[in-house]
Length: 407
Image 1 (cartoon, helix red, strand yellow):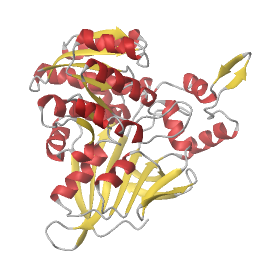
Image 2 (cartoon, rainbow, N blue to C red):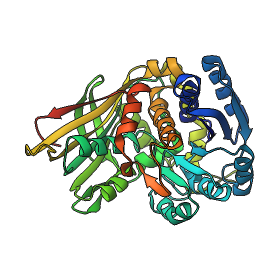
Image 3 (cartoon, rainbow, N blue to C red):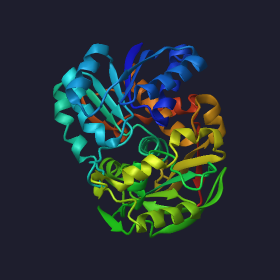
C-alpha cells in the first residue's frame, strides 16, 4: 500500500482519483492515501467530495502552483508520497520533474512537455532527465494516458503476442460522442486546439514527414460508432514508437472531427483567436487562445450531456509471430460516455485518460513496472497493464484484418 500525490484537478484527474479510491476500497489496496493538489483548491475539494460520496474514501487537498518548484518541493516533502502523478498542463512537466528530483520521489505523467510560447511538443526535454533520475534511483514514466499510453502498450502487446515485427502502424482515435454544444473541446481547450492546428507529421522511411494541418482526411467505419471522417495529425507517441520499434517503416496518427467542429475551428483560426503569441488589449497583454479557452465550455462540465461512444486503437501490419507470413491486426477499446459519467461523473475522453494514469501508477507502486531513469510505455512489459485495462473499465479486443490498411 502506497501514498500518492496527484497534481491537477481537471476531468482526467477526477477520473484518476475516483479510480484510485475504488482501488483503495477494494482492489488490492494499492493506494493507501490519496493527496490532490492544484492551483485552485476548490476544484480539488469538489473532486474529494465526489470521491467521498461515491467510495467513502478521504482525499486530502492542497493549493499549489506547480510551476513554483521550491513550494512544490516543500509540499512533496511534507506529504512524503511514493509517487507524484502529474495530471496538470504539459507546460508544467519539467517543473514537476524538478520538484520530484529535489524531493526524491518518482514521477508519472500523461502527456509530454510543451513550452508555453511554442506549439511544439516532443520528448527530448524529458528524455534529457534520464541520467538525473537514474542517479537519484528514481523512476519517471512518461505518457501514461490513452494516446499516448494505451496505444503504445497496444502496439507492444501485438509485438509480443501476434507480430514478430511491426512494419506499418496506424493509431485511430474516434470520439463518437455528442455533447450538445455548438463548439467545445473534450479535453483542455488550449492543448486541444494547439494540437489540431499544428502541422501534421508522420513517420515514414526513417524520418518525420510534415504536411499541412488537417489536409489529409479519410472516412472510416468505427465499431460502436459508425462512419466518421478522421484527419491525420501529429501525436507524441509517434516519436517514442519510432524510437522503440526500430523496424517501423510508417506510423501515422488519426483523429475524428465533425464538420461543425472543423467549421468553427477554421473561423476561429482565420480571425486570430487560436494565436499563442500575446496581443495588447486595453493596455494589457493577453494570449488569444488562452482567452478562448476561458470562454469555451470546460471539458469537465460536459459529462451530464455527452452521449455516444469512443473507439481508440491501433492497426498494425508486420511479420506474424507464428511464421505464417505478413498479417494485420486491429486492437482497440470502445468506451461509453454515459457509463463513464455514471461511474466517475466525467465523460469518456477524461475516463480513457484518467484510468490509464491510475493503472500506470499501480504498475509502478506494485513493482510490476520498475526501473531507474526516464521511461516510455513501450519499454515496459505490456501484459500486466493490459490485464488491468480489462478489470478497470477499458476492456480491449483484437481482431485480424484481411490485409494492410488501404488509406
